[in-house]
Image 1 (tube, rainbow, N blue to C red):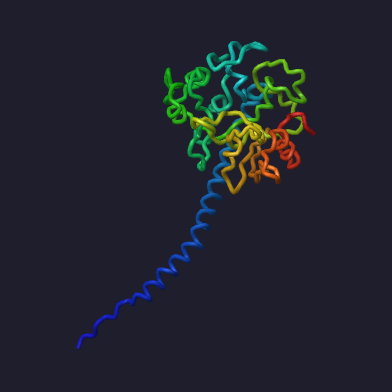
Image 2: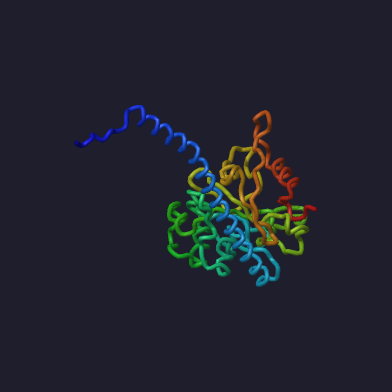
Length: 282
């Protein structure tokens, strides 16, 4: 005689499904955390590569930092006080392009958790376009400034530099501000291990982020670029002028009452954590 095989009852199937659902609920967050940890590690590696490239650049350029902000490059001429405009380029390449010869790839400019990568995608900016062409960025073409998507494709960028490191920005070591384009001299930076060179930036409207930032940038006005750079476990990765990189959890961008903090407030909170914006801070 042949015995009939006994199948699962409905109750048994429901129990199995419930167990699978419970296991999934437990394991999926673990997998997500592991994935984010891996992405954070990749981000730290990117900025360490940038730090190495920066140190090599400094050796080649007499310890002068590269251009770190719009006002360094987007101006009618390279003379102090010249008109700043997206319609012109003064011949100075900004840091994402000027550091390329020391890395020879563009992958280090991209955070794997950043889907937009719009740091160098300012639609309508002839200044940005001319830098892409002068830097021989693969895929760049005349007229690319009309396409935000193409600018993000040829030079995807997830990181922005500390624009207080520019000689066009007034700081405790650049007073009075003579508005001279270019980065500061290393000798003027009091604590290179504390002053940040670059960190993560997010997008605002139109898939544009910018390649210059400070802690809390535009926070009091509702600008989202600083806030959207918080990509890893409620924090972001930082590169410091001396070349080292690390992750730090963000400070809250609102007060206990829910009001948005000012940019200056947030800068001072990071200063208390050992992350300096002003190159002259002790």
